[in-house]
Length: 413
Figure 1 (spheres, rainbow, N blue to C red):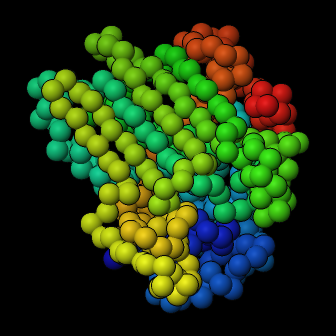
Figure 2: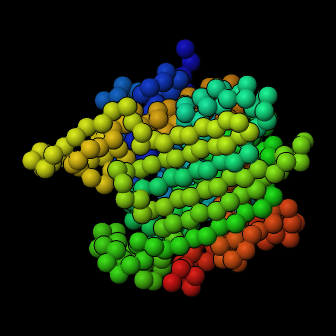
């Protein structure tokens, strides 16, 4: 069986998550990594998982000559530069079969357009990693409800949410580096999966046409003095000066170009979720049928009493972003597969080996970036944004949200 020899740029939290996912498929070997820190630990993990003879490379240009494809798992503010290095390596002779970029593709439309233009120069297949679209629960509900969609009509409303207590790393909290707050970080997930779930079965990803978007961003928990102090002490980020939103909710209206029917996707995301840990929630309503996904509904639960709580070394072994180590806890034995990481890696490998884009290309990532930017614009302007207006679409091409500029205090306080 042919396998894809994959090189990673980045060796942090998300890279390790993807290594766990790749251990569950046969199509990929991890054979290289370029990272400013954590490379040795990552190589050790790859060896323990038995998923490749991984080597540390000193540069992207060097690694590009020894791998089939490259996956980018680095902070948002580094992506353009990294893709420039990859494209330069390909122009110098590196033969790559594909490029993977984890969400979001870029911090704004200007960066996204630059990235698309760069990869078009070398005509390389791409895969945009939006894991929630690959979740088995999402794919399964579409298969189960296919007869209902055919008989009664497609879904009319979806509601998608991703919530947890806050990111792991300082750059995530810095809106100038990350691109914003929770809307940039996790709203891209909820917007994408809502759009996908609404799309009638058998239709292309962009079949439903975005018509309008509204959004409300707020700084609730992490804007309070006590929590600002916690954030500054732990991560060195000062939300009294450069705050970002920790809550965002909105609605996108789409039009079915064949029937003319309007359908809606609601999204809600927060960094102030105070339950067990990370929760993904999606549901959808059709005429006479519905579905619901809640990742905190686990088939495994454990109970840890006060007397035993001190023995818990790491609460996140039970659930990503876990906030408690005692009481009745939901445990997800295979988060990498639950959240869709396994299947998106398999999809990328199979398509790259066949000379094609992944199911989600970087062009799709650009469209998600556009909707995220439109959501920020709707919040700033305090009105619903018309996504059919040519002037608005042109404005979005150069728009940088105030929060991303480091001026979030002007609208959040």
